[in-house]
Length: 393
Ligand SMILES: *Cc1c(COP(=O)(O)O)cnc(C)c1O
Image (cartoon, rainbow, N blue to C red; front, side, top):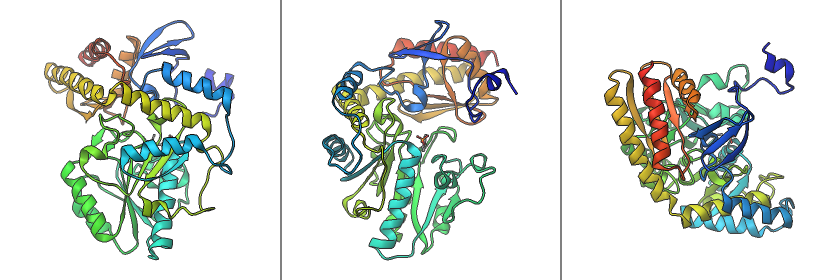
């Protein structure tokens, strides 16, 4: 037992860095010793507008004085407004609000099954997902996740899930049967190593789903709300999903999740079929509305594209100057991965010593998730620290 576990009542399910952050502003966070860090993690793709963004803070302050919680027994003007905005941005007309990513994917799975079984009257229950995917930590979503490490010790798992290789059309084709309900897919596998889906494969998957009556669920919990440079990553792939799940970036750090679906599929959630006590509460809706407004007004989608090009070109230079150490640079928007020929943990801790916070995605991939309000000068600080850390490998 470590000193930390002895002194602390928290369960030991996280491996934490020995840093106690107490304050944040923009892309800077401070620990309890007053040490300053450049945050290129955004709380794992959550604080996309930086820490304590003024417009969202102001909107939350106003809402704190108005109303916090009513339950879903009442009509909800703010839910209606945020749903209308999400429908306008996505082209998917029906929205359900919840509090987290796993809860959004649970809702997506339930909606898909309910639509197939009650609306279409077909005995379709199986959800097909992909190797290396990540969909959450509840029993259904960890079963959907294509990584064995999240399942260890949690048997028996719910039935009706299958996993096939990513970017592999014949494997998916072979797995689809009359029992297939939906395919659930990340367009960039975030936790699994920042692996973008092949665009040709994605269009073929969408066609295959349409042809076989299988619903296409896109998990945009990490990629959604501007992270890839469009409102949703599927818009860059030119497909129209049946169901989309969102969470991380939607509330700028205030917990909020959602699923979006077209009219026909969305109707399968009839009264009493699904719910959440806290889902769509006024504070979460205020945070969501303010977040979307800032992204729109400050043209941050365009900015994500510019920052992507700047960051990728700097990383390509680093790759060139350390032959053999960096094996790939990839990603979309401000979800960027650097694949190394050795352990990513060393680079993450070296860079942290220099006051820059970054993440890992698997043993050999460094994951960068800067906020949309990062400056080129801040990206220089990040890439200088990375250059030094990779040189030291
Ligand atoms: C983070 C994440 C989830 C789970 O979200 P939680 O809010 O942690 O439950 C699901 N899918 C993807 C793609 C994610 O990145």
